[in-house]
Structures are given as structure tokens and as C-alpha cells.
Length: 125
Ligand SMILES: [Zn+2]
Image (cartoon, rainbow, N blue to C red):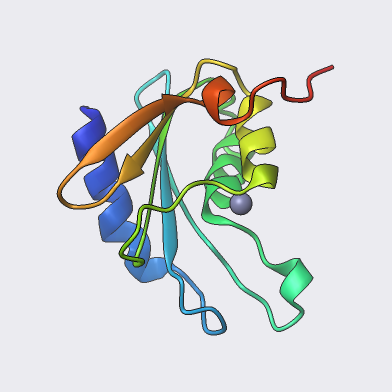
């Protein structure tokens, strides 16, 4: 599984996003160290604060199935500009390892960051 392939899975899964309010369809594909893939999408709610982001959706799905060791997460959206995880999701990814790769991009290009680059001095107990 290359990171390009992981990002392509994320792009394909954008169709499952539930975003009737913002119309911003976000998708995250999480690669475990075992090679399993868990997809997540943003799921909006009319009570906006109840909305969950794609990144946390993917991680919650994986943890629910017993997976907590992650290699990478690819994130995409239907916006023209590259989307980047929000602060809460950066913290949420960091919980599972400071060296997780975060792949951002679209059909044409991808950039890879370490999560600890995206949330320097993150909160860890
Ligand atoms: Zn988020």
C-alpha cells in the first residue's frame, strides 16, 4: 500500500461524507501497522457541535475494531485547496503516536507530514 493508493481510497470514499450544511465533504483513510484500512467521513448534525470530523470518525472505527497502532492517515475533501486536519483531530491523531504520517492532497499531488509537525508540543500525558 503506497501513500498515493491510500489517498486515492480517501478520495473515493468522499462520496460517503454526510455534510448537508457545509457541503464540505471530507474523507480520511487510516492505515494500521497491520495493513488494515479504516475509512472515516465527516458526519454533520443540525446541532453543529455534534458534528464529527472524518479523521476522528476513522480512528473511532479502528479503535472500535481493536486497532490502536497506526502508520498513516490520508485526508481529502471536495475543496480546491488542500484540506488539513483541525486542532482537535491533530490532538486525536497524536494520541496514537507522534510519528504517524499524515498525507494531504488531491488527485494530482500529495504531501506527507508527521503528526508532530502539525501539532508541535502537543498535549500528552
Ligand atoms: Zn477535525
